[in-house]
Amino acid sequence: MLRTSASRVLDDSDREEVLALLDIDPVANVFVASRVRSVGLNPARLGGQMWGFGARGGLTSLCYAGANLVPVNAGTDAVHAFADRARRQGRRCSSIVGPARAVEPLWELLQPHWGPARAVRWAQPAMVMSSRSPVPADPLVRRVRPEEFETVLPACVAMFTEEVGVSPDAGDGGALYRTRVAELIRIGRSYARIEGRQVVFKAEIGAVTPLACQIQGVWVHPDRRGQGHAAAGMAAVVDYALGCFAPLVTLYVNDFNAPARAVYRKVGFEEVDTFMSVLF
Image (cartoon, rainbow, N blue to C red):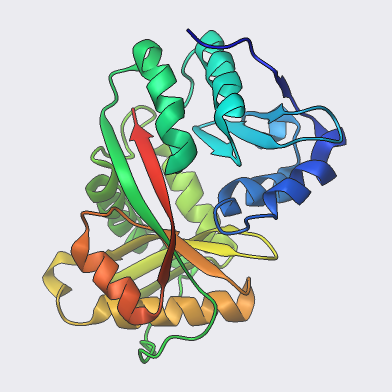
């Protein structure tokens, strides 16, 4: 049985308190913090609700409830409160993601109501680095230009399909995904090595705060794998990230993806936490 909810829906009057809580762990909270810093807490702009646990002036935990359900600094009581609200609201998200210490008990409470999941990624090491890589950066990795959208999009779709297990074209025909890819290119956070019309390597910086930024969507063309493009490409993207966006660069990866983990360690990333994702 779920406990009585003690959570509440936050609004822009809670913004400073929310950001102070998020900034306690800028690596784990980079995605949620980037959303709040960009658009605030109004649900219409945020693309969902932000739930808070604790009285005004004494917030201890948060949960972003949008396209993803993301618990923040959630202990046992907060997890129960968020699970109760999520159960009553019904599933509106495509995934639950965040630190495993909160996601695992949250999923345990929600599984009888929301299950089964399409996939559960129980252990995803979160990694971080704060200095340039010892690996020489690929000089041909650069920002993607807006006119290269149609060249890069197939690589983005291939990456998403490999990583998530479904095509981003499902549902709305890929309209939202195309919009997101185009937006990252427009704001200068999409990077690639492009030879002719072929994307050899690509990655994006998907979330940015003044304290940290998160690399996502790392992909190497299948015909060019095993040739060092991943490490050299990642070294280049880390250089861009540190020089343009934030002093900490982070990402998370599936624990079973041994080649990727080896590449990231070679580049200079260190494992600092464990995430978990439940995919619907």
